[in-house]
Image 1 (cartoon, rainbow, N blue to C red):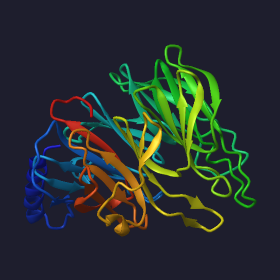
Image 2 (cartoon, rainbow, N blue to C red):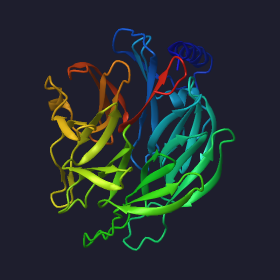
Image 3 (cartoon, rainbow, N blue to C red):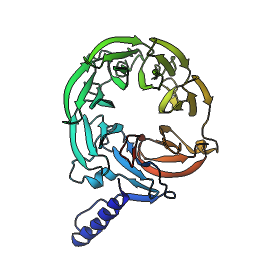
Image 4 (tube, one colour):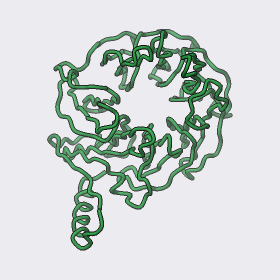
Length: 390
């Protein structure tokens, strides 16, 4: 995303507004937050989820070359798209020259030009959740059925296979109930099944899934399931083939945990008592935001900012924010690490129905700048000047 595009669009907007004052024309907000910086990473997109049923998912962009943060670029670049980005932005990633945005409750994948954010098309997938790429295909988890909390929910989820050349769904593979994040190791797709809808709200009894589905990539069929822990969410592979899987627990007596599963020897090799809210893998470092919700007290536990070394499988830092800025953060929600500069980005969802905030920290945990975002800032995608993925 080139900042000059926004300046031109804003200028044209003012000209049209002067000629036709009866029309309300949207102008994106731009804020210069820091000095320009030139590296192989040219910028990043930040996807704001927006509260469910509010139709307020939005897309922000930070340009390293100008130090400029621009809010809600999608609505500006694509003014002809009805309802703009949609309802609940759940994941974002780049592949080739395209940007893919998973919009959960709008039941679609938005496909954009990676450099301009101009919409190319959308792909219909019901209750879609997370996306991963391999060998010219995108793999997307889908809850398949409607948003409905019911311990007797009958609709199992699936993984959709999308040809990134034609942007068509070419196959599906049924997995467990309410599958969330997925990752790919040695021609196998590992899918974290949550069973997040399988709850009796009156009694508090749950039927949460406890398994990871294993899909054989060449045949695209489910081979087996691995029992891990209840209510799984994130699933990230490190460079040694260890899957780092988060369990939300049951929000009552069973706490959230981070589990390391060795795909080479097919066994759990480490369990860490961390209730993962979000996480980001950078080399051998897994950055974790934590905080445990409890139905008993209707409260969140204390916020955590942890680094786990994936090689030693030990916590090596129990608070990577070192200057006291964590006291200003209400609800840590999203995290990312610049792959070149190693700056750390943490988002604050604040009250969930108000604009959030993005904090940039130096690699040693000191605040460099912060800026207002859209509602519930959550998911990052870095882009590079040489068009390679970051």
